[in-house]
Image: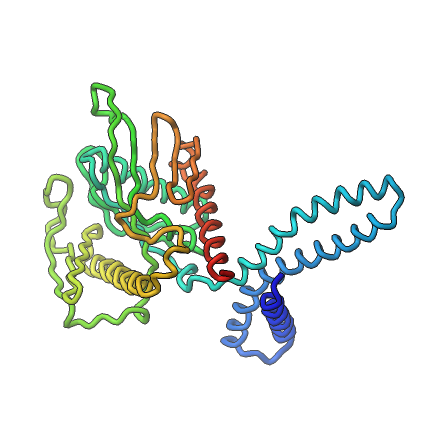
Length: 358
């Protein structure tokens, strides 16, 4: 491994030992203890990977010595194990390198999920509803909290648009590459001729922003209230509980009408508005660092087609990593979604590592 990386590793190992000693002692205040504990827990996975690499290197040296001095039977066995270990070593070294990559500061944030029907009429709305439920099931499998923020349904069970707040550990890290256009190919239930149709839905995953992250002046907002409506436009309550917030400088509009309380709808609308503004700032920074974009799996652009779900063939293809799974039912149930997400994360880390080393 490169001398610069080895030096950085030694610094981290020393810091981990310092933190361990500090935390095992006495006299730390609650705030200081919490701060050091967080740093210690962040460094621990790196130390585990470094220890695994160290043990492999020691074993490699031992096997090499055995292969030089052992009798013929032991020599053959040692050489076989030596070859296996040599093949494993690059992967162990890469795992350590991945740990040293700078993290996306937003990876540990919660997320706002927005799904909208795209081209394809009612079939697109039905697919949008299925995607939304796929993420809901995936969140449940990972032990995350999934809170509905807003829902606009069609008369046939589809979703024109739906949004949710997803809370848990590493939510944005695992979902951030889901933003983009998801395309579906299948025979609609309403299609008598049995022809395969192509339609689409758009997914946006935004890191959830706090008030301290985005400053919004009251004078920059126009807030309108009106009566909430259901499918077909019929009024669903008799009070002006629905809220429309317009951010005048950007023209962003957020409407929330799912709650019966105007106060709750306003709070939810502000939560989404903050996250959209924060995402705009993230995108602006990404554009400013355009040279780095080539090392990213996806740009997060909602117009980018990222995945195709072909129901007649039972396959799901992610176009960014050329990964195809013939288990569409398990993907839609959330069970196999990790296989796609893990491949995207691995590709992103490998690309960023190549950029750092290049």
